[in-house]
Image (spheres, rainbow, N blue to C red):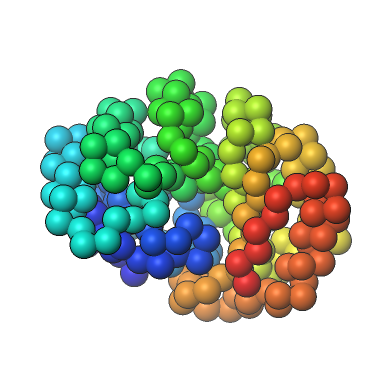
Length: 252
C-alpha cells in the first residue's frame, strides 16, 4: 500500500489519535534505508533517480490541507512511503511544518516516525529536536535479528550504531518496536524469545526513553509467513519495564 499524495488522511491511528499523514518520499515507489519484512508499503522499488517533492510543494500541500480540514488533527505525522528523514531538505520541511501548525492548528502535535538510520546527520538530529514527538525504531537489540527483520540497505549497519544514534536524545524520545515471529526463505525470524527480549531490555535501560511503543503487525505484510503476536505475550514483555516505571504503550 503506497500513499499517492504528499498529505493523506486524516486517519485514526492506533497510537496517535486523529493523524494527518505527511509523505515526503516519492508517491509512486517506496524509498527507505530499511526494507522491513512487515512494512505495509511493501518492499523498496529500485529506481535510479527518485523524484521527491520539493520543500515548497510540501509546504503548499500542507497549508491547503490544514485550511480545508473540517476537524483539526491531533497530530501531523511524518511517515509515508519510506524513511522521511531521507528528504534532502528535511530540516527545512520541519521548519515549515512547525510554522504552519502554529498558524492553523496550534493544539496539534508534530510527530516523526523514523527508523533511526539517518541520525548520524546533524541536520536531521537538529530537526527532530524541534518536533513534539520523535518516535524512533529499534526492532531488535541483536544484529542478526535486526538485519533479518529490517533488512537495512547498509549491510554494515549494527545495533550498536543505532543505539549510539539514539543516545543523542538523552531519553527524550519514544522508542518503537514491532514484535513478530515467522519465517522467510526457511529462516526463522522471532524477536520475542527470552534471549531477544533480554537484549532489548538492556537496550531500553541504556537509552531510558521517556515512552515505549510496542506493537504487532496489523495489516498485510510483504512476507506472508509472519505471525501476529498475542496480546498476552505483549503484556508479558511490557510488564517488567512497567514495574520499573517506564511508560509502555501496547498496540496489539
